[in-house]
Image 1: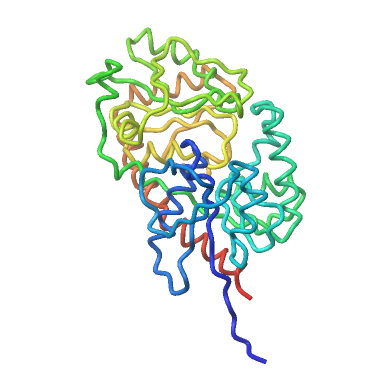
Image 2: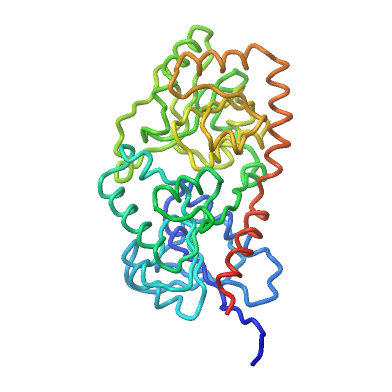
Length: 362
């Protein structure tokens, strides 16, 4: 009897590539591109996607196979298992087909369990059911921080050792050429301003910036907010702080320009699984004021200063201290750039494949 280990070929669930860009789609796209750059001794993965236009602008450096007549969750649950037959399936966006044996799924956080009021009841019910079922099959589970690992283990009633941890990356923002047009359109060129990135989900806590917005107005410093609202996912209950400059969804190049020009980035979330915007800001040399929550403290370490997300006055005072203390701001810029270097999509891809190869070995 031979002891030789064989390996299933790999496939990547490419449903994300047909969706509009948000945090999860960002993760999936960047990680897929880094997977395409790996030195594959075995057969390189194939990206499996529904029919239709791919919304990702950058190439994946992997073969792409689009098939089926369905879209969305129906395609993923009913047609993807057949298209991925005989392959180990890598699912990067919180969901995966229930009737697929050989696969891995990245669950980014336990927010639907820990912050249920931030999501529509349909979204919440589907994610809770699907993730609970997946965790009680042979599907490998992966997440993006030690905090999320422990939260998922508690919420899904599985052992933390069942869940692998990989990092996220930040170099996607640094490799773009800043588009300063966003500054010109909103009259921000040459002005100090404070930047926040988020949506109206309650756990993003944008209302916690109301006190800061008023204090900044007294100093003639704008609070600038970038992000979008998906009412089919988020139940709302949060409002934009006033006064503020709301720039909506922006491109990576525009976001790079905003990070570069901002005097400070503030991230007041009650709950995060990783906190990618904070790492993006650090990569661009923008001082970060982060909520004193476990995931952000794990990711940012001493490269940020912290304020209680439950205390709007604390948030305001901490941001103002960064604006007024040039030595502190300079220290945060330097530490932030160094800290961001630890988080790369290439590192994430290698860590993911170390886990996936164990699952695909036969």
